[in-house]
Image (tube, rainbow, N blue to C red; front, side):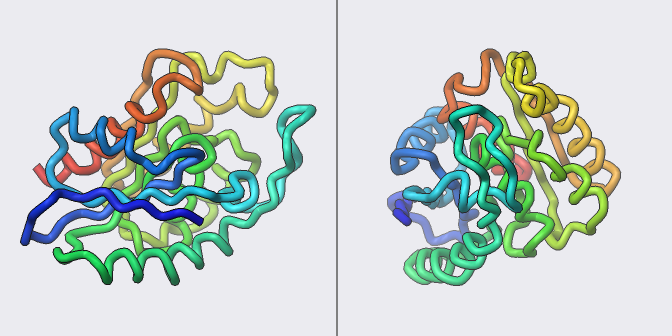
Length: 220
């Protein structure tokens, strides 16, 4: 597990801290995109070096492509490590107090970000960017269980072409994301859903930055 922390040079005010699980890199592209958008001061914690299909899947699932890896369902163990190791270490080294804590991610990490709101009250805001909300059983799990988090803002997004796929599971991603949006609204969560140009692989850093900017903008 690799942890990179991006933060303003100087501030004495309490800052939001957003945890971003990344497939590759150190989160610098997302940080730069956030700065270009004029985001207010915050701390970005990027976690990489993860077993993507293992650490971010909430339960076991067969591969969705012929040559793909199965999903091992290790999200619970990873969430324990994130909350028990990464969060205390990072926040113990910050010069400023934490105003609130959010979680964000792209693709399967977007699924993890959303799912975590049903597991812990550590995060009050989440951005599921091009989230894999097609994951079997996800909507049913969320519908059948209460939110553990006192979530006050959730950002959802997809590319406009993401559901136009022959894969029988992934083609449901738009409908399932809309289901989650409706569920969150029914539970009085401030939620937005945004469609972006392109498919699943279009401009992930920029899309993540848009989601983070929206979460930060709830304070305005």
